[in-house]
Image 1 (cartoon, rainbow, N blue to C red):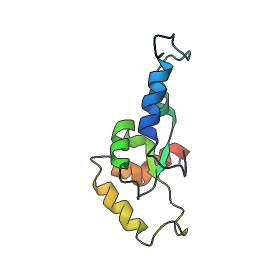
Image 2 (cartoon, rainbow, N blue to C red; image 1 turned 45 degrees about the vertical axis):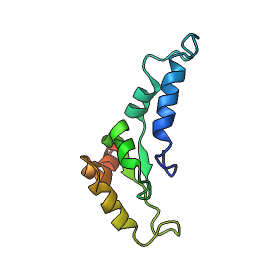
Image 3 (cartoon, helix red, strand yellow; image 1 turned 90 degrees about the vertical axis):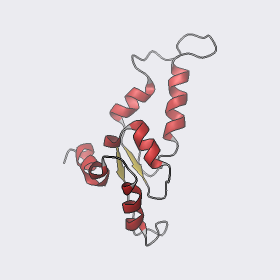
Image 4 (spheres, rainbow, N blue to C red; image 1 turned 60 degrees about the vertical axis):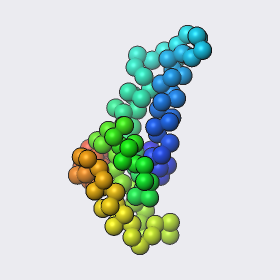
Length: 111
């Protein structure tokens, strides 16, 4: 999921899990062996931008091993403080800084 941000993930995963399990007394709507969030956590990689202030919570919810920073820097939508913003946000993360700053990209692309 590149260039889509990360803010949508929490609510979307919650909703997919509820709907896939059946709602309002209906049968299960999708023939899945696991919850959609389980598939997402195992199969999706997410890029985030440093201006996403809630990303630390989303990373905690999904797992730090699935995230990395996408940078189109120096595109015009990234301020000159982009690298400083990344450093500030990663300082708020309890763990996985190394992964988010590079190791996860290596794993994603098999490098």
